[in-house]
Image (cartoon, rainbow, N blue to C red; front, side, top):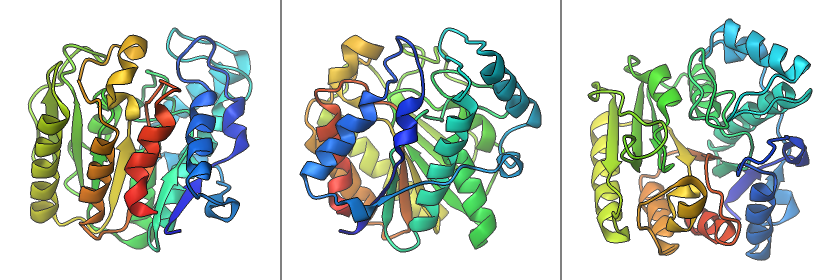
Length: 298
C-alpha cells in the first residue's frame, strides 16, 4: 500500500442536524476502501491543529466566534454548533496537516469532517468552519520551506474561502474546477482570476469527456508553468451526477472512472501530494467514487 488515510472515529461525533454533511459519509468511504485493500496499519490517527498555527490563515476573531458558538450552541442555517464542534473542527484541520506531512513519503488522504474550503479568513459557512486545506498548505510551507504550493480543488462548489485566503499570495496557486457559481452555491463568481488563481467554471450538462479534457489541460499547464514542489487536493465527490438531488449538482459526470483518471493525471506529476475530503453526499456512490480517485495512489 502506497497510501495512508488520516482518520478518527471522533469525526463521527460531529452533529450536523438534517444536513447532508453527515457521519455516514466517512463510513461509506472507509468501508469501501477497506473492502478494496486498505488495512488498519494504513489508517493514521490525526492530531488537532494548534490555535496559534491557525492564525496563519484565519483571523483570531473567527476562532473566538467558533469557540463561543460551540460553547453556547448557537447554530446558523448551514452550520450547526454543539459543545464539541470547535474541538472536532480543530481535529479536521489537524488531519489535513498530518496528510500534508505524510505526503513527503507517500500519498495521504485526510478522511475528515467538517470540510473546509468555504471557510475564509474571517468567515465560516457551507458546512465549513476552518479551512483545512489552506491551513495544511500554509503550515507545511512553513515547516518544509516550500516556496510554492498548488491547490487543486474539484468540489462541485467553488471554494471561495480558499480563494480569498490565497488570491493575493504568489506562493500558492489555487486551481478550482467547479460548476459555474452563478448556478450553484455560493451563487456568485467572485470576479476575474488573478495571477495565481484559476477558476475553471463548468456549465450544467458538462460531460465526463469534456470535464477530463479541461482538467488535464489546466493541471498540466499550471504544474509546468508554476512548478510547485507540493500539491494539495480539495477532493469534492459531489462533482458526481448522483449528488444532483441532494445539493443541486447539474454537471453530468456519470462514470466513476473519470475520478480515477483525475487521480492518474495528478500522480503523473510525481510531486508530494495529499488530499482532503470536501463534498460528496450520495451514500450509494460516494465510496466507489472516492476509491476511484485514490486507486492510482494505492
